[in-house]
Length: 508
Image 1 (spheres, helix red, strand yellow):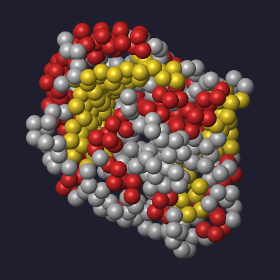
Image 2 (cartoon, rainbow, N blue to C red; image 1 turned 90 degrees about the horizontal axis):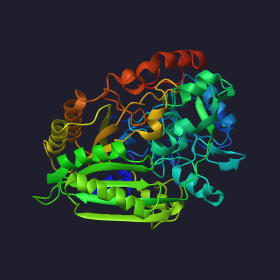
Image 3 (cartoon, helix red, strand yellow; image 1 turned 45 degrees about the horizontal axis):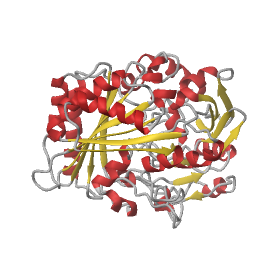
Image 4 (cartoon, rainbow, N blue to C red; image 1 turned 135 degrees about the horizontal axis):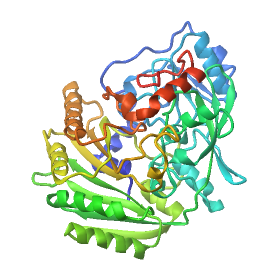
C-alpha cells in the first residue's frame, strides 16, 4: 500500500526530478541585493544563511515541486532557534524584504519561496514526549516523527507523505489515515509556540491567545506568525492493515458508486483513497489504473471482511488484491514508499547526504469538496474529464478521499477548519514528464485541470482543501475558509496588522 504521492511519483517516472536545480523554464527572479547587509544577519543567526554565491544555494532554494526552480530568493535562512526566526523577521522589516516561510517545502502553489528572504524552520525538528503530550518542532517531518515516537508506543496522527513537515500540515488542517478515527491533525493540537510579526514569541492554547489558537487550527500556514513548535495529543496505533484493491477502468462508475455507499457505513477505523492513474505515453489500448489503497486500524481478517463487502456491492472482485497487518512504524514506511529504505534515506534528495527520495516534476493540481455522494452521471462526467484531451508526456491522477468519522463530528466553526460536512474530496493532478516543459505544455496541463474542476464544480460544495492551495482559485477565501473567513481576518488584524506575513492567498 502506497500513498498518493508515492504512486504518482512511481507511475510518472519523476525520478529525474531529483537532479533538478534551475532547469525549469520561465521567469527567473532577482538574485541577492548587494546593498542588503547580509553579514549583519549572518552574525545574528545560530543556523546558516545561504546566499546565491554559496555552493549549496541551488539545493537550498528548492521546493518539492520542481516548477518553482524558477524562483531565486535573495537568501535562505535556516533557523535553529526562535531567536533566529525573530532576527529574520526584524532584519526583513529593517531592509524592506519580502519573506516566505518554509517548513517542509511542499506548498502546492509555491508560497514557501519567493524573491526575498526565505525563513526556513526545517532545523527546528525536535520530537519529544513530555508528560501526556508530544512536542514537535515545526520542521519535524512525518517520517522522523513516526520513528522517533516508536519506542514510546504512541504516535502523532500524521499524514501519508514522509517529508511533509508539521509546520504547515497542522495549520492547514492535517489530513491522514488516522483522521477518520481521531480527527484532523489540527484537532489534536494542544498548544503552539509562535513568533509574531513584532518579533515576540507567544504561546497559543485553549487558555492563552485563544483567538490565535483557534486560527492556527485550519487557518493555513504562514498567515499569523511563524510557528516554531507544537504540542499535540498522542494517539495509539499499534498496528495497521494495509491494502490494495485494483479494478478495471471499464467498471469505474460502478466502483465509485459502491465505494461511496461502502464508506458511508464503514467503521471510522477504515481510511483509504480511490485513485485513477494514467500515463498518456503508455502503449495504445492501455486502460487507466483504478486502485483503492488504504489502511485499516485493525486486523487483516476484519479488513478482508470489509473489502469483501465492497467487491460484492461493486459486482466485481477486482483484478488483484493484497492486505497485510504490520506494526505501525513498518506500515508507515510502506505507505511512504520507503519499505526498502532507512529512515535517513526516506527524505528528499539534498536534505541530507543519505536522502534518496526524488522531487516531483512539474505538477498542476486542483481539488474540491463534495457534501453529497456522486450520482452515476457525476462519476461518468469525472471520468470523461479524466480521459479528455490526451497529449504526450502527461501523467494524470484523480484521487477521491473520504471524510466522515471524527472529522465531521466537530462543528465547522469550532476551529478554523471549516470542512466538516464533506463526504469526500476529489483532486485532479497532471504531472509532465519533462523537467522543463514548454509553455504550451504547461498551458495544456492547466487547461486540462481547469476543465476537470469546472466539470465537477456544479456538483461540489465549492470548497477546497487549504493544504492543497490552488493559485488558479479566484474564490479561495470562501473555498478554503467559508464562514470562518471573517473571524480569520479579525485574528490577522490583531496579530499581523501590517500584513507582514503576506502571499497571494494570505488572509487579508
